[in-house]
Length: 217
Image 1 (cartoon, rainbow, N blue to C red):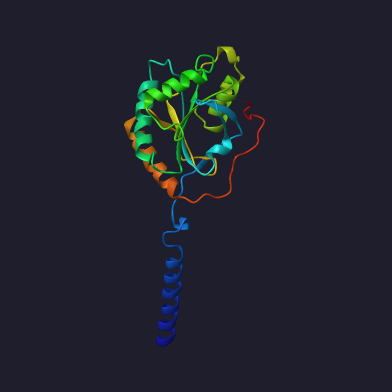
Image 2: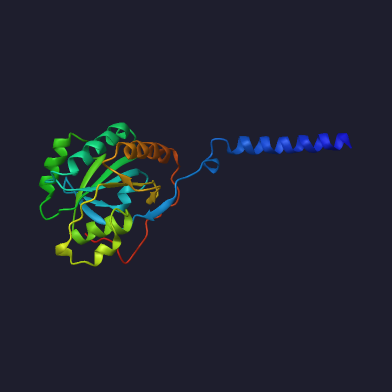
């Protein structure tokens, strides 16, 4: 009887050891942040007059924001904090900052280029986007959850999106974890930790989705 118990215990230990070695360091053992949304198809224009689509985010961990170049309020602080995130990860090949203007009528390609130059950033790692106002705003609300989607039903000419929040998108076009306050140092540090973890995750099947809210050029 004792011999049977010894053999049984040995088998259990052997099995547990096998699975530990099999999955140790594997994502199966890691608690992943929740998926809260998906990036919907879009096509915008960069500060260099180049097209930028949702598929250009594929394979990269992206921090997303909305701002406008003439902002004298929260935007300078937001972009100062974003600069800290950028400096932390700018040498990571799979990292990118995706910044959208919320004032496309004033923020022309030339103005965005001037603003990017003033930040002294690599625009392949921190891209500034403009496009149609309705498309930009729908992306903010329906993809990145940076504003209430119900605001889409207000008159477009009466709308002005002015948000201090950042979203984090993984390599598969999934908005992950939570929405971060771009003005709070504590949130910025949490965001950095989140980005570092997502950079370690392998890319799986892209989850960009078609939708009636899909952005247009």
